Image (cartoon, rainbow, N blue to C red; front, side, top):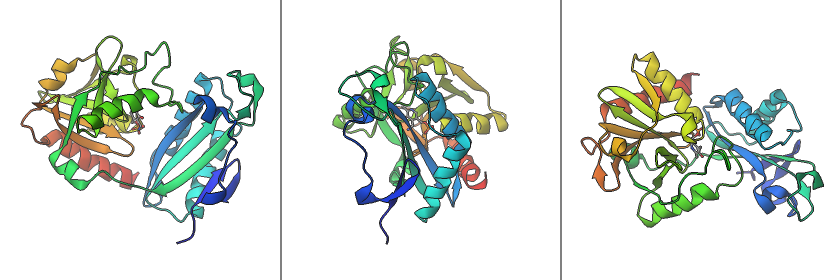
Length: 287
Ligand code: PMP
């Protein structure tokens, strides 16, 4: 197989030659934003929405993207094509660019646009069959007034610290609470609960990333006539839910069967979770 090609600033480089400056503020300070995107059978799922979210994240951190949204979308498609990938995970990165050893973004030049495409590495199939166990992390989600989780920034330490707590406890995902002690999201996934036939999920103002998979699942559920409620929730809601699942670009829709050693519902993936996963699969392949 030929070596992967990485897009940097309008050109494609062999993996070994795909390099940016060590003075880039993306590396020095986590000063930049990114997206995780997926393509299914050559079709990129919700490309425009991902590109829009990247531009929104960039705007929030006062970073001007050096190309139009249409050119960005085209660059993603061209990179996929150059790599001959149909089912792929796409990492779109925008850094502040190289500058001096100081925080001041005015001392940087040339924001870097990087597109890495890779084959998708899925969670083991048995997790979809039997469900995930999660624990609540002690690390709280970033306070929205400090660094709003709606910004998908290159500084993911908040999630990484919680993820370490999860893996130390033998769990692949960890639940994060916000500064009010409410359920926010997991380290790289949004959370949903099923309660008496309704679907409940924390609202955006809980301080979460507005997940694109989350949006898609809400649309699917409403299309099925299910009531979807976006609201503040606490861990009691999770412990006493009938079903629980997580959503994310990589995870798609994954059942959660235990939280903090309490089985959720029957302790097995529930019927609404399974149905939404099936319909999500149909959507990503059909859209
Ligand atoms: N929350 C966080 C913190 C994330 O990093 C992600 C993306 N991995 C999600 C939620 C899910 O978002 P999306 O469905 O857009 O991938």
